[in-house]
Image (cartoon, rainbow, N blue to C red; front, side):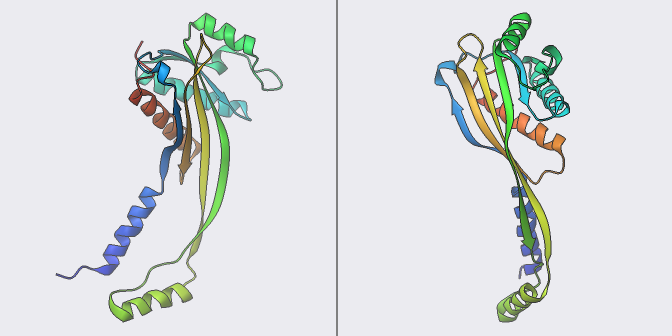
Amino acid sequence: MKKNPIKWYFFIFVFFIISCSGTKLTQKQVNEEFKGKPVSDILVIAIADKEKSRLSFEKKFVAHLKAVGVEAVSSADVIPMPADLELQKEDILNAVKKFKNDAVIITHVKSIEDKDIYTRNYRGGRGYYGYYGYAHSYVHNPGYSSIDTIVRLETNLYDVKTEQLIWSGQSKTWNKDSKNEIINDVIKVVINDLQKNKLIKKK
């Protein structure tokens, strides 16, 4: 039975689109000293250029942490943001003391990159004429352009008592339709890796 080449190429195209959309950790650092000594109460800090973005990210991160049994609090709820948008160490220390946090997690955007992607429609089949059809389509069909947006975030988890870095990760997200989707995906990837390395636990 002969395979339909059009269906086969369509399957490859769909697989390519799915595999090129998502979030993953591209870099990661784990402090071996903290494996087996997980934290369970975290102050969440997002560094953003807009207060609304900070609040949205932190609240989502807190919600995801609490969903897996880890206690957490948003810095936006407990530390007033000064005019220059820079939190002072004393204010952070006062917050972790008040809420008895044993760790601080900080996230910020490292880069946002837009790439122009030009795609041509496939029109061809098997054999020499199939290839001719493909080549003719490639030369004569205009195709279409799209924007591939890549967002990179860095997240660091610190021990409150020693101020040592427990975990650090850089995430890469691409082809997501909304900011909320990006935020949720990044948080899930980070929490999954923290759980995998037994660095967080239920309180």
